[in-house]
Structure formats: C-alpha cells, structure tokens
Image (tube, rainbow, N blue to C red; front, side):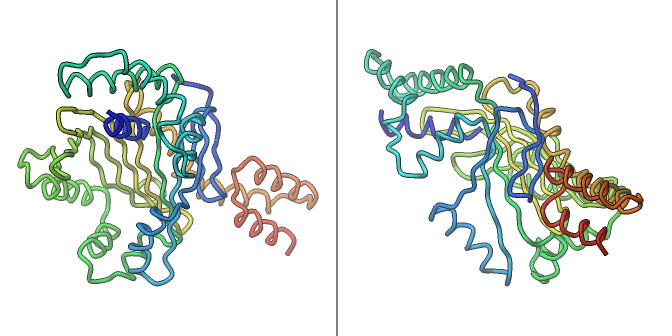
Length: 318
C-alpha cells in the first residue's frame, strides 16, 4: 500500500481560476500564471545528472529546469527533493489514516480509491496545472548548427528555412512519423505503461518569424490495474537567443486547461519584440532622467530582464 500511495501522490501532483500575475523566473522566463503559482529550480543531483547527459553532447550548452505550480504543491515537492519522507507529509498521512479503515477487495479497487482521494485533495487545495520549464543558453538555430549531421538537428534547420505553408505540410508528415507504430495518426506509444494521444500538433512560425512547436493531448498511464488520464500541453520555441520547452500537466478541473496554458506562454512569444519597441521608444525620447526612470520601472515590473535593462541603460547613457 505504501508503494502504491507513493506512486499515486507523486504522479498526481505532477500537474479554479485565480487572478493572474507575471512570474519572472531568474530574468530568463516570463509567464502569466494564477497568483497562487510559484517556482523552484531543480538542482538536485538526480536531475543535474540527467541534464548533463544532454549538455555534454554540445560544447558550452547549459540547461536549467524549473517547476512552476501552485505554491502548496511547489513546497510539497521541494520538501521531497530535500529528503523528507513522503509518508510524513500531512496529505499522505490523511490518506493513509482513511485507508486503514478500508477493506479493498482487490488492487484495482484500491488504486481507484487512492486516485479519487488524491483528486479530492487537489480540488480542495486548488492545485491546478503543473508546468515543467526548460531553458537553454542556445537557440534552436544554434543547437541545430552545432549538432549538424544529427537527424533532428538537420530537420530543425530545414524547418527554419520554410514558410508557414510549407511548415503546415511538413507538420502532417512529422505527425505521421511520430504515430507510425500505432498507424492511427494519433497515438504515440512511449513504453509499455504510457501512451500519448495527440489532439493538436502544430509546427509554425509566429508573427515575429520564430519557429515553434505546440501540441496538446492526453497521456494514458497504466500502472498494473490502475489507469490515470493526464491532460498535457507542450510548447517549444526560441526567443532572445534561448531555446525554451514547457510541458504542463492537469488532472482535475481541466476544462479550461488549454486556454490557461496559452495565456501562460503568451509573454514568452511577445516579450522580445515588445522589449525592442519599448526600449527604442524610450531612447528616442528627450529627457534623460525620465528615460532612466521609465527603464527602471520596466525592469522592476519584470518586462525587461537584467541583461536587457543594462543594454538599454548603456544605450541611453551613451
């Protein structure tokens, strides 16, 4: 029972509309999220080792990984990463206390009950979707050029040179390739336990000419007699010479999940051009004191990163 509950709790909490805020993650990522959301950086040894397996392949590549989600869940996962025994967690204790009074006829009934209890906690604590964010210090274009000869890298280079009409046709071919094993143009078998059913799958360029991949669907996770359906959203793009990957998961109250995800990533798409226009307008105005004051306000609000602030400040002073 302990093992089963551990799997359910950690799996569930991977992933209520509240007032939104712009979350500035180390001046590298701007996300529009519900006001209850916070973030942590994954810097534990296990995650670092996994990331290093990728970064060691390309000289100078650095990748950071963050968890973004409701503060109660972020605190929960941070405690687990810091070594807290999951069975000592207050949520887990409450479920175990209830479970002691139950008499389950089989593993399937037991699993369904645990899933139901986890969902009740998520609803009660207003724990909505979770997002895993990765940012690299190199753009998709740079990564493709430095790994020339690799099949994926060469494909990215080809996609970068296409217009949106050509990308639409290429997207269809890539989707067929990904779902080749299932043959239904929808399902991607990940392993014996997991299958991803694609809904939307799109590769295109945004209005600023930046290549992106956007997809959503459902992951079906089978653990013995248990089955968990997880709503997913994925977004990959580049901006400010960085590559970004966002994967969000939702388990409860998911009817507006896709809209909330689109709203969350909007600052990533628009920030670069907005910053260029804003700093250009500031430097064109006459009053030096007023220019610096406006620039400082933009930095404090999170509209400008520290690097962008310093560059614009130097331009004004020069």
